[in-house]
Image 1 (tube, one colour):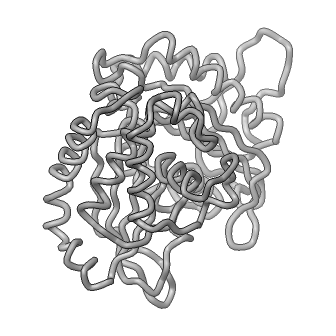
Image 2 (cartoon, helix red, strand yellow; image 1 turned 45 degrees about the vertical axis):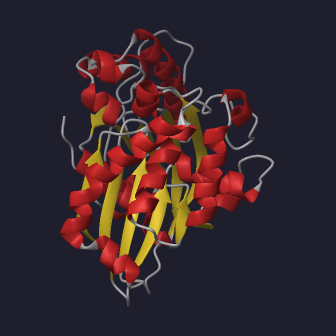
Length: 349
């Protein structure tokens, strides 16, 4: 059994939770915590035929990476917001009788000089053990989570994840018979919705600033495109694209005209590139309040979404795959697949 303390009103600190796959994980309850630059997310699931069945979930915008690019440290306010979310995650993990878990931290924590102190505080106050994972491991987990959406009839794939502090891009080869994807190469850019919004403005971004972001992303990805002749293969119709991030799920939800965000309608859906760019440009033209009024955006993300749109448009301009698949899934799902199938996590610190 895992060393997870029972829920209690006692002031005694929680005992640390075990991290990683354990005997019996394939038949038990597994949990995945993904602490990103902007969001704290949890999935709790049981194995099921062909995958898993989610029995609990949680997501909260915490903006842990606010100011990290400027100060190199996690701020007291951002850590306080994040601790509140992690306490909820820990309580849900205990309540659900989780037998195997993994909690990972990504770009904001990779940049922060005080991450070790924050990690110690998290263990002391919640029992969760945070792993600081590399960009390569983050990409691998995101790919694992999105892989079921790949079309095995299309030989190559681009999978991208626009996060709060970074953007991961993966280049894959897909087996026609099995549908399994082999990772050919990947790149992680330290460009995400939080740090770009801090640099270029989030409440109201100018067209010039928006184009500057596009140019910057394209310049970073140009070597990656040339190395693999991705644009040439797209011209031959040999490339599919999957987008995994709040940016693309928002674009899909707005494009569908949803009265509120609905994961069951968005995850796995398709979105035409031109339609997505039209929505992006419409959001750029709105002010903070105008974007906040969109039910698939809201006030918490209104100042971040335009920066994400610029990153997306840069990817679409460089690699104009006419239609992309939308994935409301990623790192958490990848962790769960690992826990349930015996995949070995790769740790850094």
